Each structure stands twice: as structure tokens, then as C-alpha cells.
Length: 351
Image (tube, rainbow, N blue to C red; front, side, top):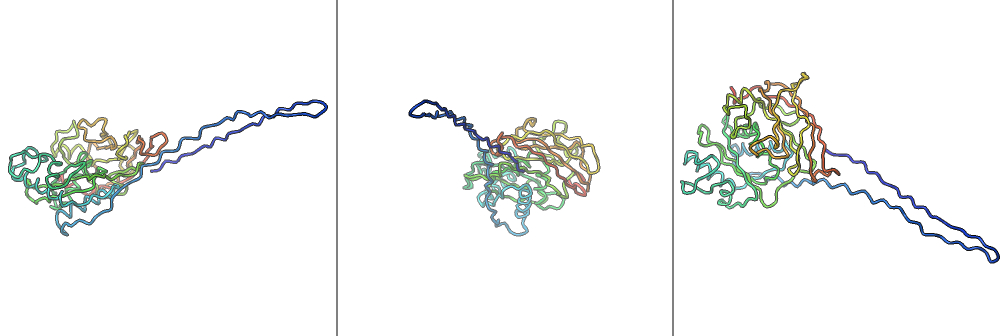
């Protein structure tokens, strides 16, 4: 969104004061006093909006029809819907992701799905960053998400499942990523989910300072009905089981500002089309998220019951994004946004 500013130009009025004296004989004389001049400082210039700096997309070398290509295309579509910069394939990060996938399968999960233990078979690094460095990629930032295929066995469902969460969605829509690598899932093998590793090279991408991105996006269809289970569990009132998520959550709705800003929520609601009463929701921001995974520039709402199938919902948000990147004279960007989406016919996670 754009802010409109009115600039007022203050005029300065100078008065010339002239004194006259009279005399006889040889005539008169006059003097002109130099008056003081009142001045008004010019108005401070309006700060510039931080310009977007995104990289061009590069066609990946994954085989057509492969699970890696399916996951890559689904992730690219997810980020494009949010107007985020493209994240390109890195063969080195592919190697790091595959090495870790092999490690986890060999060691039955290792310490956790995201870490490795030195001295165990296939070890290449304790953390994601360590493993990227071991594969020849030196990141300034890095992270990893994992996910399993659903009913169709297609890796695009991995991205759908990850986007149906709070914490994993945050990682996938991080604004600065430049590169990624994918280790494909092995259908039917619970020890072989998809591993998607992200890295940022020396120069990260940026969205514009007045950026506002929402998900689900306006007029999006086939939106999920529930929040997918994830660890850690974002909700203290749920026991973390799939059954509890299927019964007591809706698909998460998010709004995001530029990453250097602080987002503040005044109102964030979702209402079934044709109804006047908003749904009962949880609002999740950096102020109330105890894990620290939700950044200051993102806000979520999650319903306390599933969305209805094949139903249109209307969302409204009002609030502010505060920071110098916005270009607002006060540093405060006012956000007022309304949009709609339609849900899918069913939710495969809860069948």
C-alpha cells in the first residue's frame, strides 16, 4: 500500500522599513535601515521508502516430473503469491539436504530431525549452517524445513502442509532467502520426508519498505480447513495430536510487513461470507508467541474450529508497521486491508 502525504510550503514575508528626515536650504536626506528578516526552516524531507531488491529467477535443473521439481514449483508459487523474491536452486545446498536425509535415515532420526551428532555414520555437521558449509556453501543465514507427502504422494503436498502452519510458514516466507536445496521424499518411507534447506548468500533480498503480504491471498481457492500439526506446538490449549488440530483449529491466516518493521495489530478478523459475526480466533504475534519463532513483522490468526468446506471467508486487518523503511514521515505506516478466499472441498489431513 502507499501513503499519501500533503506538503505545506510556508511563505516568508519581508518588510522594508524606510525612515525620512526634512530640513531647509540645501535639501533633505534619507536613510534606509536594514530590517531583520524572519525565516522559517524548510520542512524536513520525507524519508524515502526502502526499495525492493529482488533477484531474477533461475530455472532449476531438477528433472521434469521429479519430486524435487514438484516441491520447487509449489514453493515458488507460494512465494510468488506473497510477492516475495524467488529463491533459486543451489546444487551445493541440494547436496547438504541429501546428506542430511541420508544421515537421518541411517541413524533412525539422530538427535532430532534437524541436527546431527558428531561421530555417527554419515555425519556432515551438527547444524544446517554446518552442513551447508561442508557442502561448499557459506551462508550468512540458513534454515531447514521438513515435511511428508499426503494423499497423492506428490511433494507439492509437502509445501501445502508446511504453509498450513505458523512456524514453518514463517521460514518459507522469510524475505531474504536467495538459495535452496531439496532432498526429495520417499513415498511410504516415514524416515524419508522432504528436506528443504534455505540459505542466504552475502547479499539478501528485500521487499519494499511499504510491503504488505497476506496468505491466503485475495481470491485464493482450495484453501485448507485446518492448521497442520507442527512441533513445537503453537497452542497451549491443544495437546499436539492430529486429532486436536483437526477439531480445534482453522487454516492460519497471516499478514506480513517489511522485515525491519514492527507490526502492531489493531483488529484482525475472519468472517464467513454472508455472516456478520467474526469467528472466534487466536491472534499470534511476536508479543505473545513464547517460542520466539514468530518475527515482529508477522501476525497470524487461527480459528478455534475448522473452516467449513467449499466456503468463502472475508478477512479484515487494521494496524501499523513502524520503521524507517516505510518512508512515512512519522515512521508509522498505517495498514487497512480486506480480502477474501474460498476453502477446499475437504482436508486430507483430517479424513
